[in-house]
Amino acid sequence: MNDVFQAIAMVSMGIVGTAVVLARDPLRQVLILGVYGMTMIITFFALQAPDVALSAIVITTAGLPPMVLLALRKLREYRKEHDQ
Image 1 (cartoon, rainbow, N blue to C red):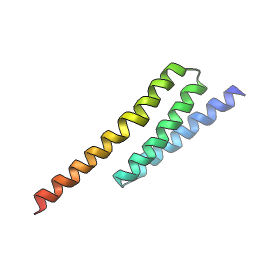
Image 2 (image 1 turned 90 degrees about the vertical axis):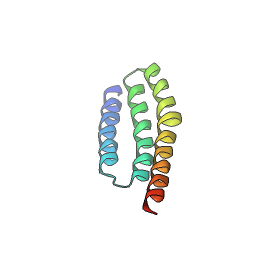
Image 3 (image 1 turned 60 degrees about the vertical axis):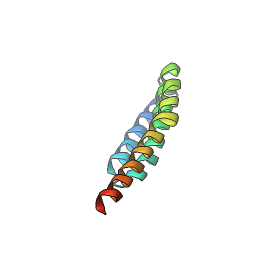
């Protein structure tokens, strides 16, 4: 049973990772990246690495998405200033 769960978790991680790469809009990439982080956490739990999964929860939910969204906002502001 655990082998099946591990295989499903890894395959879903590959599918969601491909979706992140194929998304062209940066905002959609960030949203899909959050889903990818959750599938990565599930995979870590399936592989019996809860300590890694707990640290990944902090990084993928509290750290990475806000940083990327702030960077996108700054880029839009920079483009508006230089287009005028």
